[in-house]
Length: 423
Ligand SMILES: *Cc1c(COP(=O)(O)O)cnc(C)c1O
Image (tube, rainbow, N blue to C red; front, side, top):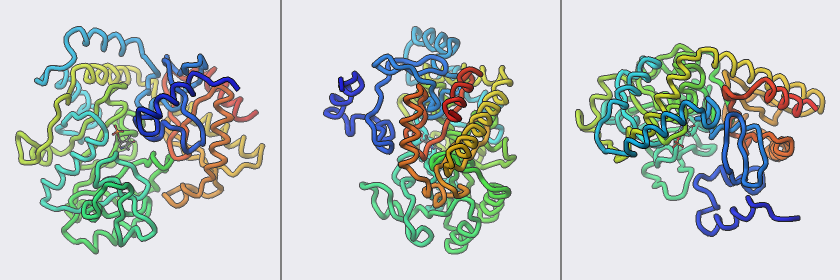
């Protein structure tokens, strides 16, 4: 078979970058394939360097809620570029973006802009530690908060007693400060608080877990986290890097009606540019330098181009309230199509969906935590991925990533996807 241009580029990339990529999931390893190299994308479609066109349900892993290359966002960005790419000094654009965020998410009384979700969660935790004077944190197995040392901990079966780093290069002494609880398991959280009285600075959670596939919080779980953190003087951090502006303008905290102390944002907030934000209670954020003693800085933070893309994206979402019900309805249509595929072919499929986020797990178990998520048959997922690609539909190259619906997925795109699923 003739080698494709993607294959040629991949071969060159392998010599230049680890695994040929700048972020591991892009390598298509978990579906046993070689990556597609992308030429360009527009609206709901992504085009590879071999001229193939796909309906895109990856949406750059979340940022692309308005679809690719939205003309108003591009126009604003191009215009901003002519005024200079970076100044390392404050601009009015940062005020505008900060105010927009605060209007959408009132718990974010004060914010700080950074360049990646990794930085946002890492810095929120540092602020929480500085504020409480405590060292330990709690995270949940299967929740992803970026790749900072203390958060690359998932722990094995000894989850509740031992904290094992998830990556080489993370000192065990860092990992020890990270306690790991089980998502949707209140007792696992209670036990950690009992065993570590007055030592826990922060509890960080994805209010809807979306990095072990989409896993919804059970009724009362987030409320329980709010109460137990409050009782223990622990800072509750919602990692809304995916859910922020995805489950509505106010994110998961508005959707579920729970007010965290701190929030991390990324992905959509930068409209496709490198931008992330952390923020929350004023008394906590006032600990951040130069006001307070928690140091955190960034040469390109609040960059004028990234803020421009973020402002325009949030304004469009705010001014088009029809978008959220539309993308949610489309996600429901796809969920129904998955269900009928499962029926037709006798597949074991469990579908989790909230708003425009969804996952089809190849398992007969109800998926409500890491253990049930990882019961999924990843080989069956890889087959499904290959089948969809042949149909001109690009879904996440991993069972454990979400499917994202954008405002540019038309009825025709959704119908075509439904048809591929139910054929
Ligand atoms: C993507 C993601 C991050 C990390 O963001 P980066 O910009 O990739 O560093 C953190 N938390 C969640 C929930 C994410 O989905």
